[in-house]
Image (cartoon, rainbow, N blue to C red; front, top):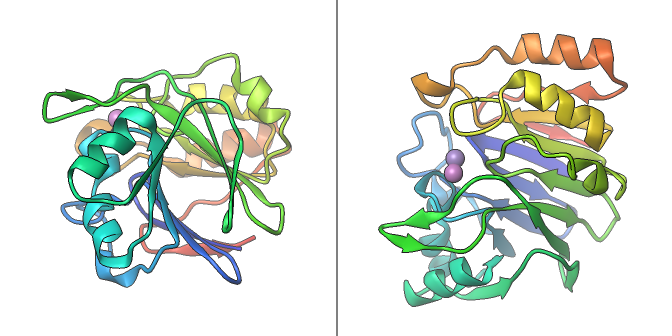
Length: 224
Ligand code: NI
Ligand code: MN
């Protein structure tokens, strides 16, 4: 499995047969090295409807036919904008031909252009090879991350930027609850308000937990 950090919270998960995009904010993303046309996803998963997560989801769905999978209100909105969409809710999991999708709670908000777009979410995606990836979306720290950790996570993508989400200290506590094998920090250094040092985060996490931290620069990938 190849995980590409497109930048901000945008991620591509690539397995032998499939490509999954999460929160594909590419156009207008000041750190992105990719173009939306670089991706041919089988599905697009969205954590919530803020512009820095919804991003290019609708045009990519229109170009490729890939469904947008999101919480019901956000999926309905994407459909109204001309995308193919599947509306789920917190709970699940649901099986698709490219893997399994489960939406988890997130402590945040979700709207776009004055539309309320349902609850914000995290996503647990399980590949057909049974690798589990948790994308926390935008969230504060919450105790029920311990329940998500019980699923047995290979990778957790955690925001560390502060201001809109957890800061590195809260993300360290999140790692203690989630107990993933690997953490990749996201949602930092895209804007001045969310400036953080991921190296310091890595040093603390690796000193205090058994989790390994992989820092990816925008455009970089790792193979897990
Ligand atoms: Ni947000
Ligand atoms: Mn955000």
